[in-house]
Image (cartoon, rainbow, N blue to C red; front, side, top):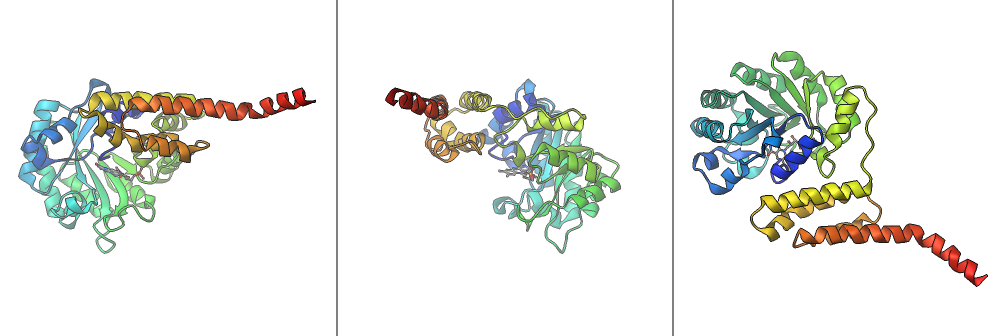
Amino acid sequence: MAGVSESPFRRLCRRFGAGVVVTEFLSAEGIRRENEATLAKLRFGSDERPIGVQIFGSDPVAMGEAARLVTDVFQPEFIDINFGCPVKKVVKRNGGSGCLKDLDLVQTIIRSVSAGTHLPVTVKIRSGWNEEQRDPVAIALRCEDAGARALALHPRTRTQMYSGHAHWDEIAAVAQALEIPVIGNGDIKTPEDAVRMHRETGCDAIMIARGSFGQPWIFDQTRDLLDGRPKRPDPDVETRFAVAIEHAQMAADYEVDPRGAAIEFRKHLGWYVKGLPGSADLRRQLHAVNSLDEVAGIFESYLENRGAESREPEIESDLEAVAV
Ligand SMILES: Cc1cc2nc3c(=O)[nH]c(=O)nc-3n(C[C@H](O)[C@H](O)[C@H](O)COP(=O)(O)O)c2cc1C
């Protein structure tokens, strides 16, 4: 996920049980022109493997060249093509889900990328451009026919963006129609949702996106349930904070500009504390950090005050005892 699943978060997700991770979507033009910022996002550690590099673009030649460079220089386990991104800036140039308006183009891109790499080429699609063109099975079959080795479906159209709900029945239909592995995606908020998707759709794998924000342990918990074990409990607050601090440290080491790193990281901090008692105030403090060094202190004072709150009744009764 752009702006979220950077190297530090991917490493955490792998450690917490994600079977496979994928980079943020990266522009084929940026890769081909060796744009510094794009190449920086291609860096990953060995502890992230197996990893896919996701590329996007509407020019088949650029896509093929980008695949070649990524293969030669970065050697991920696979190359994934993004045909799902709904963002205006991207679809304006027919990238991402913009390609879904032209299935010949989709196939040409898959063939060109496959010609540029010996690695497996996978695709991520939406159900179509809009309601009129909604036909995930036809799109998926065209992808398979062009050589895609696995397909992830987010069953919304581009015009839906993130509204409404993901149509899991479309995942089931695509899984039924295709020979290649089908990865179901969309609206998994809990490990139980993942089990339900697996049962209802018969998909071969499950992709969790927003459900991992601030809770990378969702992967271990999901694996527990899928393997028929009781789900391990959510980590306690202290452990949550320790993971957030470790993530912040990795982000600080990863980014060159410390203040920029802190500002970028604020969203993760907000997600890590979501749902905690008094989290609105905590979030306000975390959303104001200008250095990741501030984070540990904010967590410490939250834990101390929380301790004081829970001790308050005792103190009061002590005072009462004195007064008596
Ligand atoms: C902030 C954000 C960034 C995303 N970036 C990407 C991306 O770079 N590549 C991609 O294939 N999907 C991207 N997605 C879409 C997700 O991968 C996923 O398809 C979608 O969020 C639905 O799954 P979910 O309900 O589990 O979040 C992004 C989603 C969000 C919210």
